[in-house]
Amino acid sequence: MANPATVPVLDYLARQQARHVDELREFLSIPSVSALAQHRHDVRRAAEWLSGRLARAGIDSVRIDDTGGHPVVFARTPLAPGRPTVLVYGHYDVQPVDPVSQWISPPFQPEVRDNVLYARGASDDKGQLFMHVIAAEAWLKTGTLPVNLAFLFEGEEEIGSPHLGDYLRAHRSELSADVAVISDTPMFGDEEPAICYGLRGLVTLEVSVIGPFQDLHSGVHGGAVMNPAHALAELLASLHDQSGRVAVDGFYDDVLPLSEEERQLFQRLPFDVEAYQNELRVPALVGEAGFTVLERLWTRPTLDVNGMWAGFTGEGQKTIIPACAHAKISCRLVPQQDPERIAQLVESHLRKHCPPGVRLDIVRGAGSPAHLTPLDHPAVKAAEAAIEAVFKRPAAHIRMGGSIPVVADFSQTLNVPTVLLGFALPNENFHAPNEHFHLVNFHRGAQTIAILWEKLGAAYV
Ligand SMILES: [Zn+2]
Image (cartoon, rainbow, N blue to C red; front, side):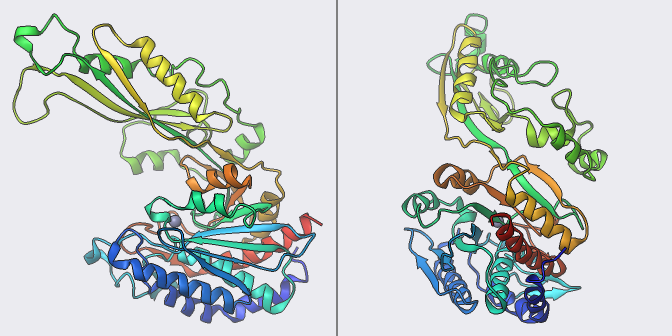
């Protein structure tokens, strides 16, 4: 049931819909492509537009903070004691637009066709972060905000957030919050609003198998030395067993088992395994026995070879024994696995299984742990209620197989759990030509966020 306090807020959002779309179009027309030096000034302009808009929403504390790269826009509402603090994160930078000839309307001339807004950044992430700004405005103009809000909008997400970690460490106390909410992900499907409460972590390694001092003639030397390409193939093959499990000793020791509740929540999701297989155009899906496809993707750790190279790969034949062979390996991690320990285990496995006659050189990359916000966290409960109030159906509870570095940073640096509440659709062409955002979800997203804050405020009373 909607609380009476939200009635004027939702009314306000309903009355201002046309204006909010016009404003979003203005925001989208600024080509804030963070990857390209020629748009450096435009990225700054987008930050200025956003800070101006936050101020017009009624937030008096708004700053543009320099980071050494593109700036962060930071804003917060006056701290009211006794209310929870919500950290809203989004990014106002966008991906490049090439190939521009494939756009039906120019990427920075936003166009609405059939109630769908087309522009670079429409759904990733300007359109989605703007929902939070207008939800805040709706509360500030019509009543009393039930939560304290801190907005952190960065301009470097699409280039890997190189300065965000330092920024978080430098502003740790200002950014302290009860929960972070991010709208930068899709719903589970059309009419399937989703709460994403878990992400996998990541750790990477690069392995070099070193053989003779240089490539050798395979006629002169073949049969007397270990071929590094063979040794690498043998090593990589040893990393999995026949049932699809990772064969590294201790790899699964710390894995948080899947709860029965989660199993059931995932089973309820309208996930079509056959359609998924067809979409990937593979003759069969494989994976760890005893788990559904979604469970494998979201809740189980994996080890993948991302690349391997050795010897002669040019045209024709060159009969050599290569001097060395290389592979890049990554592991997706799940809650309670420690990236460093996993890298160590994989390294020990490789060293233990390395055949004689070659040496190993292993370089470990940086890792980030998995993230999980408990299903009974007040923010998850509040998001469930808000989604149900607006979409008139229960929220889908999902996890994602990928990693979002900022979420790991929030949890490690700020000790803040994150809920991902996105309103884009999975096929809205993020990073691709003709990126778009269904305006019906833009409006429903803003309403959901406005109600989320009311529910969160109530949860902490
Ligand atoms: Zn994004």
